[in-house]
Image (tube, rainbow, N blue to C red; front, side, top):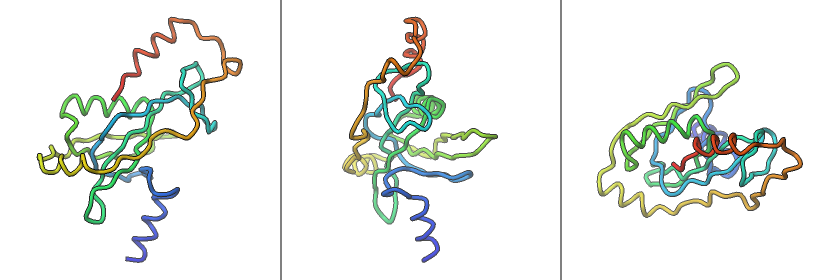
Length: 167
């Protein structure tokens, strides 16, 4: 029990509200609520509301898991590839489902598999809807300072926006 508690504390890290997975780890849960979409730059702690060439599309969403005999909310965060996998899975199976998220490393890149586990019963869905959701936004979200980024033509911006649909 003691060792499992330590491993759990290590995995939870900062406050325990974020889903943190190491290579080969997985978690099962339900995506709930609206996603928070933002843009970020590697090693820049700021979030931006507008896209520019050097920024990556990111998202956060509440992910309800069953832990210690009850449903609780965690925050699942990711980039465009896992976002697209979640969209595909939800289109195929629906949103009132349990999904298994597995993380693996390939070279220098992290990969996430989004696997369908089960449809929720009406009772399970009603219980999950009662779980208090977490605030997905940072306290401060900024507009990207245009002078720090290269010029972006309207065509590249339009192409980018067509790839960033809501979950």
